Image (cartoon, rainbow, N blue to C red; front, side):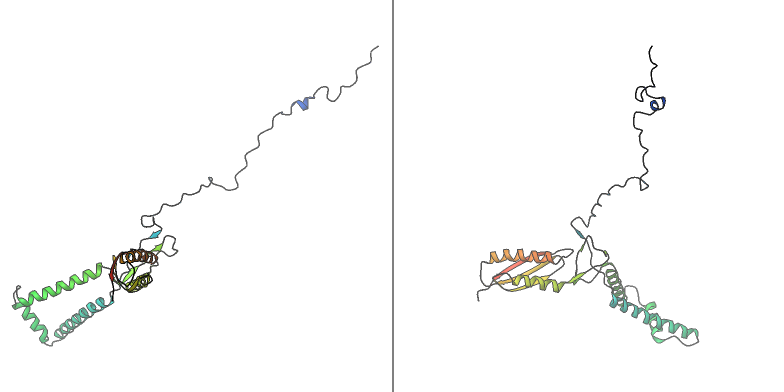
Length: 239
C-alpha cells in the first residue's frame, strides 16, 4: 500500500496570489516641482552701451544758469513795459501823454527806414537777439572740465567737474617733478594742454620724452571726460 501524499511544500507550487504580483517595478509618479513656472535661465550680461564700452559714461559740460543775462534782459523789459503802461494809464485817466513818448512816436513816424539812427537801432536789437540765442544754445561754464563717471555709478545724474586752472596746476606740478626741469607753465584748454618747460641740465630731447610720458599719465589720472592733447615745448636755459 502506498501512503497518501502529504500536503505540498510551501515552495513547491506558487499560489495564485503570488502569481499576480508584478515582476517589474512600477514607475514612480513624477513629483511636482517645488517652484511653479518654467525653469529659470541665467540672463545674458547686458551689452555695453555706446558710451560705456570703455568702462566709462560719457558726460557733458554743465549748463550755466545765465543769471546775469536773464536778470539784465528782464530788468530792461520790466522798466520799459512799466513806463509805457504807466503813461497809457495816465492818458486814459485824462492826462496828456508823456513828452518822451510823443517825441519817440514823432521820430518813428518822420524818419525813413534807411536813416542812420534807424539802422543803428535795428543792428543793436539784432545783436542782442543773437546774443540771447547763443546763450540759450551753448552750455557756458568754459572754465570747468567735466569728469567721467564710472559705468556702475549708483547716481547716474551725479556730475562732477574740475576747474581748468586747477587741472593746469596739477599738470605743472607733475612736470616740475621731472629731473632737469627748472620751470614750467601749463595752459589748459578744452582740447589741448600746452606746457612750456625750461631745462637747466640733461638733454632737452630726453626731458621732452619724460615730460610727455609723465603728463600723459597725470592727465589720465584726472579722469576727464574728454582728455586734452598734451603739447610740450622745451626751452634750454643756460644762464
